[in-house]
Image (cartoon, rainbow, N blue to C red; front, side, top):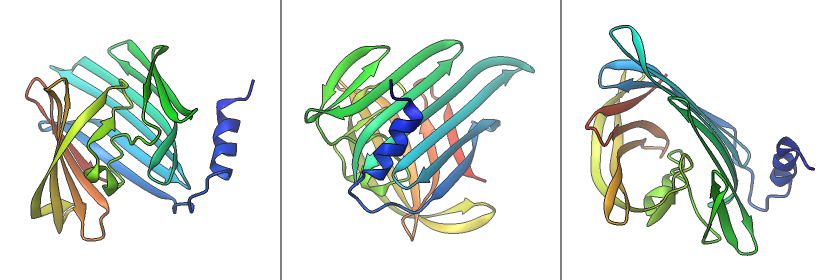
Length: 210
């Protein structure tokens, strides 16, 4: 049986789209004002690796633990392959998907669903997500309706410097219920520089580049 690593290597070699330059994003993640961990993204050719590790402490006790890793293979703006593993307070979720027979078939804990051939995840590093009407959440395989609002240029702090950045709000909904509320910022070169999200409980999650 072909190993996952070998499959990814072969898939990358067979991509028809021009290879993207290698790029990395590393964020410190805050829950309100508490630093809870990091989330890193590494894009090499057409493969993205996402790694998140969060710990929330209350009175010096670990109250919440979240670990997430996802590996994605892309062809142009279309997802070809996805493998994701998430541990949230010891609850494990496995998501896997691949393009086959004109559909992107994605499974959550081995329960499959068939999506259109060209889908995108919440690939914040790619501003093309702002043009989509639906996006796939790689953590739980939910295929969400999304609505984007352009909120204009804002001055924000990035690595200690004031930067003029374009601000967008993304709402992700399922069956009419808002599941994700995310604000994104891109600098004048269209590079992703910051993120904020409001949890269903009303907490603010902030991503700051490091």
